[in-house]
Amino acid sequence: MLYDTLIAPFADFGFMRRALVASLALAVGGSSIGVFLILRRMSLMGDALAHALLPGAALGFMLGGLSLPAMSLGGFLAGMATALASGMIARFTSMREDASFAAAYLTALAAGVLIVSLRGSAVDLMNILFGAILAVDQSALFLVLATATATLAGLAAIYRPLVVECFNPGFLAAMGVRGSLYHYLFLGLAVLNMVAGFQALGTLMALGLILLPAVAASFWAREVWSMTLVAAPIAMASAVIGLLVSFHAGLPSGPVIVLCASLCFLGSLLFGRRASVRVRLAPPVHLRG
Amino acid sequence: MSAALRLVDVTVSYDRHPAVHHVSAEIPAEEMTALVGPNGAGKSTLLKALLGLAPHVEGRIECAARRIAYLPQQAEIDRSFPISVFDTVLLGRWSRFGGYRAAAKSDLDDTRRAIEAVGLAGFERRTIDTLSVGQFQRVLFARLLLQDADLVLLDEPFAAIDSKTVADLMDVIRRWRAERRTIVAVLHDLDQVRRDFPHALLLARALVDSGPTARVLSPENLLKARAMAEAWDGQAAACDVPLRATA
Image (cartoon, rainbow over all chains, first blue to last red; front, side):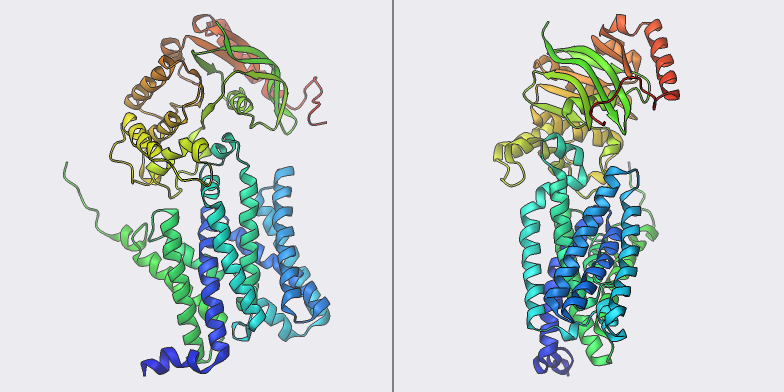
């Protein structure tokens, strides 16, 4: 019984195995990116960035059909262009970065949908917007694994400057370190993860496995490193449980995985160790002295 | 007396608006100098220019210091960030380990000692979001202690800080002076400046006066500074001196 529920789907079906490996890799790399997105107060900007992949992926789709390398490269270029353009608009005008991100993403989303509809069918559009983790093939799997590896290695390499850049950018500048370099390296890794996530979860939900576990972890852990250590298992559990539920209930897997992460977030919000509803509602302890 | 800093016709501007205008002054070495002036007088901007962090600086800044430590205004730091007191203070040794190397045992020991020196022993593992404003300012002073700088720039070190903490932190500053370091502090409490700081520099975008505190903080000078600050607000955009750097 237990075997049938938990193991058999993966043992019997190759597409489930590939989906499992892909989503676990996404979970490990993405969740640590998510922690930094939250710490930099960029969660909504990250979301906008993920949508901004669309026109690039769509252009890739137009030129190369449903080919993963073309769409991924297009998506990555579009994401980086959006990040750099919004950063530059914010620097050279008085427009705030969140507003310029919102402007860029609405433009990108509209352009992307238009480009896909020029050539593709509604099914193609659905695939790009919402992903198809059960259709992950060997090359997509390699892309996801390479991304996870690059993410962990990259974050390890820039970890300390990046943390200080989030916390006290002026100090880093006074030490003669160019914080913006690490900011853009980090954005590059973030876009890379969104590209990897968009094959599995689509451009609209690519951030689900990146952001939700990190938000959930912020209710449990007190420091940056412990937040990432809590976020990764939450993301991995969401991926595995989501895949199994979608398999047994016959539901689309992407949304179910993201909803599992949402449940973890809700649970943490209610019962977490720090700043959760439970902590707020607990009768205040009146200490002596 | 030798000068730690010499400003020659320094103009600093943001968005084509001069925030510091044609300032020439000397800041004496191994001495405590207060940087005084009304809000918006360009005091923080001048500190940033000294650090090389201001965007458009014209004129010349001659600086004899090898190492500069800087205390930012608290508003510039994300105080909700999940980082411990110990790690925050240890950052003061950044120049030793940078972004990649491990901290030496001596750095860890010095960090513990610095935390003790500012009266926060036992707070090492606390995260900074649990600290009061005064306790957090002590943390930042401990970080300054570790930086071992010959020029210390303090931007409003005592804003919204209680008198006990101010007294403790003033002791730290006096100890720096005894160790022959140069201190420049942006301050608003003129009584404290008269009491503790032998030198002062009065700024209202342009320089009003600099030199011995008793002379600089005369009623006439203070009145002049206020009038200048108010007048400047009205015509800030229209500067008669062309800005080469932004042209």
